[in-house]
Amino acid sequence: MAFHIYFLRRLLFVVPLLFGITIMAFLIANAVPADPVTANLPQNALNDENLVQAFREKWGLDQPLHVQYLTYIGNLLQGDMGRSIKTGRPVIDDIKQFLPATMELATLSIVIGLFLGVGVGIISAVYRNSLIDYVSRIFSLIGVSFPVFVLALIGLAVLYAQLGVVAGPGRLGFRTADPPLVTGFFT
Image (cartoon, rainbow, N blue to C red):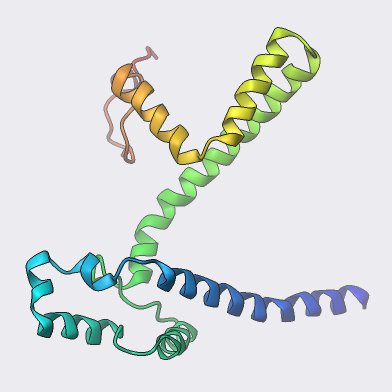
């Protein structure tokens, strides 16, 4: 019986948590100093006040912030995530298109990070206070200290642009060239 009460309590906590997440996401998106109108309309269209006003009305940007939020929540509760200003498509379609690649990247990153982290940790523990331990500590510290996007850019610059040993940015399809052409290694 205690588990059922615990589970019910946790389930009831999800509603205010999701409400808080939507408020935070909405406020952060609106706190960005960039104006969606200037970011999405061509430069010559910004001089035409009628076009700017029509854009604001079309996307609901002429409404007060609390009205925009309530409209957003009302639509979200009905399963409507809205339309993307960038692509003009329903947001759910964009999510369906890009979620598989995102999940693939996240899963592979976690698996590779887990194996590398545990492997380096074991080697570092076995060879404690040796050169191998110190080098692994330095690389671990660099890995957690640098922002991930900086490490990714450095990795692309060195491994792709300079050495040419990995494929470039983007997702490789099933009909990609043989592995030696992609990786530079023989199979």
